[in-house]
Image (tube, rainbow, N blue to C red; front, side):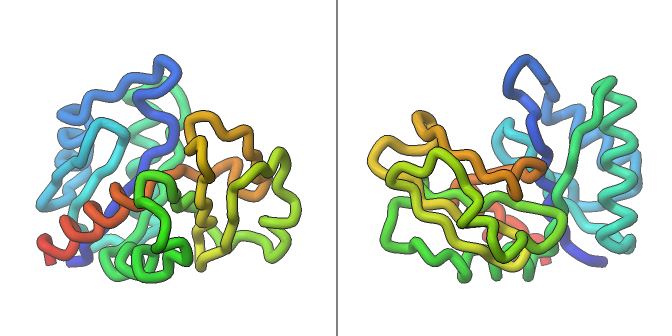
Length: 171
């Protein structure tokens, strides 16, 4: 069995409510094992014999049915999540001011150059992530737009590190 972390996009923000117990029940009914959630922002940990593509497709289909709307899901294995943590180029910054924006595919090479409304943010590209160090005012007040990351979902590095730790414990 492979340990996975699924990161749901745009749940429990803007009126799109998903109770984490419902998310756990959905994952369990899909046949996933060792199902856990972490905080109420759509972070799901589980094990499955299925490949990443199948896991993603099953979760997205069932979530769309449950929510009545599309819910994009980014899926990473435990080792991939560990690489996101170790690949963070902004380790000198506080973890709550650095985010990894998770994508389905590698970001285009010009993702940082095409960003708009850049103030004091710094951007770096990962394998299937875009790292952003939010400056003095943090993510909440940033006006940064990264077109290449529009369909992704962001987690601050404190959350990513905790998810990586929890995923490692499941192995």
